[in-house]
Length: 334
Image 1 (cartoon, rainbow, N blue to C red):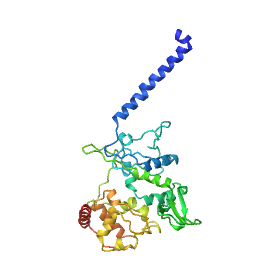
Image 2 (cartoon, one colour):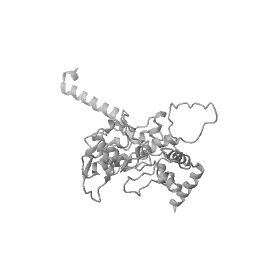
Image 3 (tube, rainbow, N blue to C red):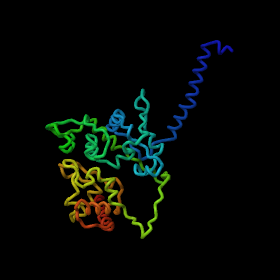
Image 4 (spheres, rainbow, N blue to C red):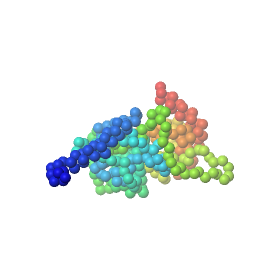
């Protein structure tokens, strides 16, 4: 055949076949995917600071230990309110014209999944302390420290973000720890990672392979949340398992006048809306609001904190907390 005798025609035909198959198998399906999968209506684009933080996240290889995908199995329920969808990644575009999309879904969870970390841990101060040295807030952490993202200044300026690091972690260094722009960009990216709610009327995908709950053999099982578990998942990273907090970073709950006192309205307001009135400590995020806690979760947390570490405060009921929550919401609406 002439085709096999003429190298120009042979290589031309091979090149044409390759280009045609590429268009048919790769390019057309990719375009159809982009047309079919759009970001969810409530999704917000990354801010300029978060975009820079994403580049730092990629450059430091954070994807090697952290995933950004909530699988549709029950064990992943702790990472998000629903399984991840294709629409969650529809806004992820090419890094630039010369580099492909940075795939951050990950394949291994040496560390926690970050799909909804912006809701689970929204505190900028906590994230900065954690980046400086993870062992400050989580003693068992195996995550590497990132001290090069911070500077030491004897006299920080008003525009500097000072990080409240306990003195035991700054031995041999003079001055205060100040977050660099890179650290602030990285935290801005982490704070932007929030699972978007589905539009009203959209059926939420279910988590599969749920564990069968064992029926109680004696008496009725309590329907109230477990305060110890709630504290461990949402409060312990700052206030520590012993309730003593971290000097210079996070206040103690052990012996706290707020925890054991009679001003229940202030106590509930701090849990729901956060607190930022003490310069010696980092600001507390609105944990209760971010986690959408009801009066039952708040009551369980308060009762746990009031009856541990030597505290001897009066227990509360969900009904008491409900009245205070309604009052706080009414006050905020005015």
